[in-house]
Image (cartoon, rainbow, N blue to C red):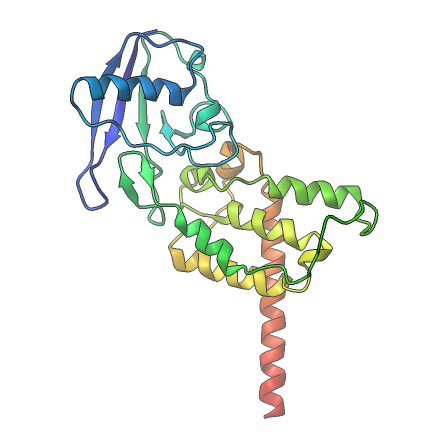
Length: 257
């Protein structure tokens, strides 16, 4: 396959970026998208040019690092991670435009690499589960309805790649935050810190500069793990319940004073 690549090159966060055009004429349709980038970088190194910086780790669709905006869509034309996207998805002679995530809270580090540590700080704000679960308990020791267990597991599949933010016109992180809140809110182990977790994670999300959710559902459409926006509805309920509780406690304290 012959492919024309238009790749965003940016030396650092403070440098001005621009698109560079590259031609590849030895691309196999069986290659993954990242393998194709390996070929590009090998060619650039042979020419004495600087290779394109991009994030990757597992290349198995579970680490969430391969954040590329491909032809106007996070991770490309299929609802999957970039590393699981194969070149057979494209046609011989195609022009492919590749950019980093575009969000205030995800500043560009270099080329296609963005700083996604805002997600880490949001999770850290949620704190830990205080219940000491010890070793692996017997399957029936804590009865949990299958529907609830399935919903919690579905939420827990979020890999924190940031595609939801990249897809949203507001750069909202609500799908990510709602998945992380939901997986604990649904299970018994997550109950002690339930209200505090929702309140602190939403506050941190806002502090990081992510936009508001306006329910366009673009996040759900592009999420490689098919996280549902029903989690956002749950997050809203968790957050408002936490706020009401905080208000009631504060009002009771003022009354006692």
